[in-house]
Length: 407
Image 1 (cartoon, rainbow, N blue to C red):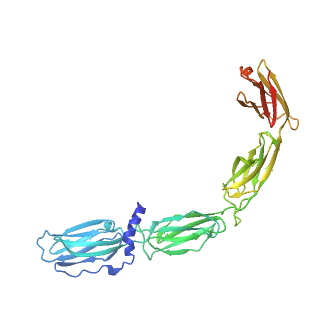
Image 2: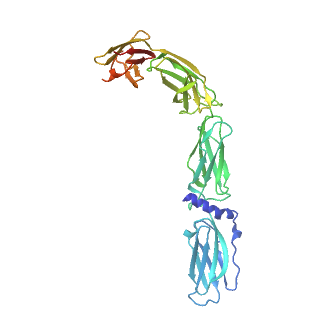
Image 3: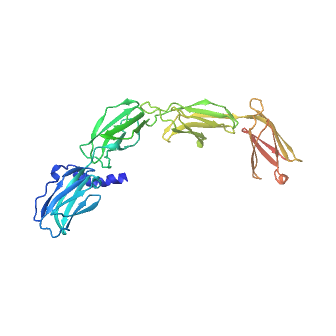
């Protein structure tokens, strides 16, 4: 409601910012009588009275009426004429809204006088309305933010010139100089330019006994410059179990500011010129670290990192060798069970538990994954398996493939 109230007040206040004591003058005597305003100019919340006399009244019960018109309301006040005199009071509660008030004094359906008086806002008190935006700026010399304060009195009337607002601000604990701004169009504002150093502004403002809430303005790093990635952990065997790890160099902008924590970095994997995977990591202290699972077969990868798909790092070439040296396969026709293993690794050892085994038969549409325990696995087929022609299975472990004929 307060914001709507301010908007409406602009209509009635902007035209009266130059109001002075000359706005209201004592009314001259006319053929019916005379009256005057006491006082001619008031502060918000003050009562006002009109006194006068009427000549040749017809009855002791005659009434006189004052019609009041403000930009936000209209009201009427009537009183009886006693011994030719009258006094009409506009109570203080009806004079709380600042602006120009037009009045018409009516007697026996005839307007005997028209004048206006001005309700002036009081000094600012309590909490002022204060806004700033944008609240985040990029480091550099081209960005800026505006802080706007709207001081108001106890009746929510915005103040008029020549009232002032004092703005103060600090940057990373260092207090800046105070700046005084004159209210224009019911508000006062201050422009804060960005800096080449990232940090935080704290901004406050006051006017008379009115104070704003503390406002924050964040100066963040600008767009990062070129960066690189480096390999920090590498397992060269295609076992689909181990992980390789990459980290970026420290990402900074052109002013040497470290970019914000939580910046998303994409690590892209290419195989034979095609993207086969994208891993994501967030920066902490300007550095992003990512862990990528090894492939399951012998191949080569090209890895690079990108930010917003605009800035790309260097490329790193990785080659993976098969992880399995050899393994045995045997078929038990009676039990229809395929025995796999022992599976021997590239170093002459049993491969770790959980090593993936891919079993397939293209004619039957069989595609199945199992996992080794102690270098072995017994795979039992369905009972209608002997109907398949040709009777064979393909087994792939760690990039090493074998085919077994079934009886």
